[in-house]
Image (cartoon, rainbow, N blue to C red; front, side, top):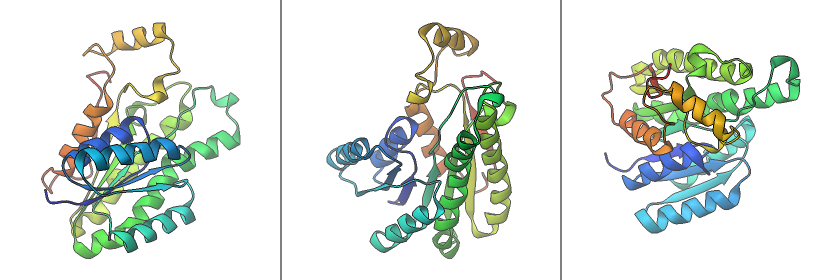
Amino acid sequence: MKSKNVLITGSSHGIGAAIARRFAEEGMTLVLNCKTDAASLEALARELRDTYHVTVLTYVCDVADDCAVKKMCDDIAQTIGGIDILINNAGISKICLLTDMSIADWNDMIGTNLTSVFSCTRHVLDHMIHVKNGHIINISSVWGNVGASCEVAYSTTKGGINAFTKALAKELAPSNIKVNAIACGIIDTRMNAEFSAEEKQILESEVPIGRFGRPDEVADFAWQLANAPDYLTGQVITLDGGWQ
């Protein structure tokens, strides 16, 4: 694949950072985003420039804010041109009973996990439609497929991403824009670091492959999707070690 412009949201750590490294390894021009951790984002950008000699832009903004996303995408377009591959990865979680969740927490979850997917996609589509090509890869979760007790809000946002993926793929297929999602199982990231050692052991025992997934495995699969046949679109593909 010749060099493409790739926007990865939530890329200061975890899955997003792993995806950035994988695509940098292939010579892609990267646009990295995070909400608050500018230091980690800039450190990753320096690492990628030094190691792979690729162009890396960084933007610290809240992708739940449509105006901030528009400003970011307008600046990207003026600096390097349109986005060819969008990876909607930004996400947060909160484990609690629904009765213990505040409306502020609910709105924060919806904004970060779901509205961001709408906004980032909407603001990069003009270029993709114009060139009649593009890839949108949404990072989802198995909980979007089956739901999880004490993660109702999170499951709701991921279920929304899955429906968004399937519907938008149909809408954009005539423009040769592929839209797919990766429904991740338990991945060894900061999001799952709150589990105790005992809880992690129990979870690992439930996964047929016997361990948590690694961020680099998600990154490898995202790269495969970006290079998949054009006929592969509208799919929510589970990557969970056989867990669900």
